[in-house]
Length: 239
Length: 239
DNA sequence: CGGTAACCGGACCAATGATCCGGTGCTCGA
DNA sequence: TCGAGCACCGGATCATTGGTCCGGTTACCG
Image: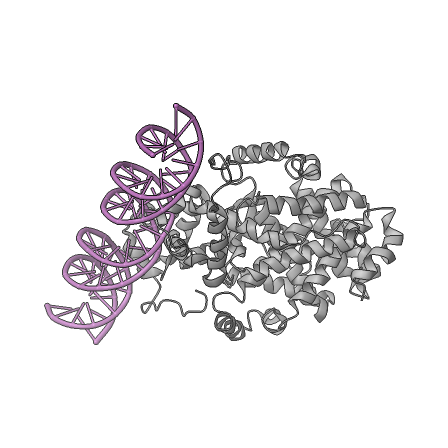
């Protein structure tokens, strides 16, 4: 998708269409979920014929790619000099996560290469911030990937579980676990389904473990940043 | 899927079918990818009519659920007394990741609740091991989720990127980044596409950050386990 | 030996992604 | 002013897919 040249436009300003399609696609996805998005339904919502969409967009996958990238525009990129790299990264990752949870359908689409401008801009910020913080190469990629993987996995997991109607599937699953509690004693007793809520707290905890690890690899930032950057935003998670 | 009772069988041993379907589905998925799996093609490979499949399986989603769970049987559950909890967790997560990479199509299916016996058994081991290590509740869920999220995200990311034909998409993406290198300087210079390979090393690094964080929260294990459990398997990642 | 229940599959249906090809209206140059 | 060209639209249509109907066929049990 992002690798093809944009559909050749006329001579002047585009007559406002691709944007509307994507916008409406996101609305439809938000309202009814991923499997209810069909080109016909989308066209109907736009008050047009389904075939017309194919003039602005090559395939349905394009729509999905565009929609997926579009929602990441909601993630605010922290201004550079906020309160240190750790605060910046925390804010970015937090916003990323919020978007994933606000648009649960996105979880199912994460399995495609994300090369849209919004995603790239946020990745760029992540890399740049880490670089500026003094994270160097063996650890730089690990840090950037670790953080991305962590949010993505987290969003996927959380969007998956309450998904599919929320309480009914969740309840059935809980019941299923309870029924087999001899086979899965630890899960049944402490599993994610019994320990309700606090996904956010758990997420923050794990995020700080990662950040601690990243920070520990930066020699000069290890000592002072621990108080300057970290503590202010919920730094190292020593209990 | 996992919540419904198993399709009522005859009086004695099942005439060997559901297993074969799942087995063949995995083979087909491995060979041709997720989008090439249709009920007709699967039936053809099994030398039967497509309709027959629906006697053994309720919907195609069932096949996917079953296939997804089936591959996790390949993840060996470490024997309890290996070399401490950290080694056990590392081994489990490593195996988990290996499976995700060995069956790249699984990445796209992770967005569905995984309640199959194989997945549950491995989750059970994870919880049990952490419990036994002394991780307690605020941190227990965070640890289990953090680790799971991390592997899943990692598998998703890595399976996504080389996916779709491997080098061609990858090359085009690299080209695309290079073309816009003014907009994404850090990405273009240090991004994942230029810093080739070493996904494994990066993964291990991040995993150890998480493990360090988990370990730091366990008071008694913090001092001695650092040498006993951690060092042996590549413990804390202070550079 | 007859019937009952497990199992199979051809014909069929509705929905979907995508294309063909004939329109329509706006703009720009002469 | 006008007509030609091009961006844009959409009805009809195709192939494919997931899934069902319903009539067969086998094999085991009484």
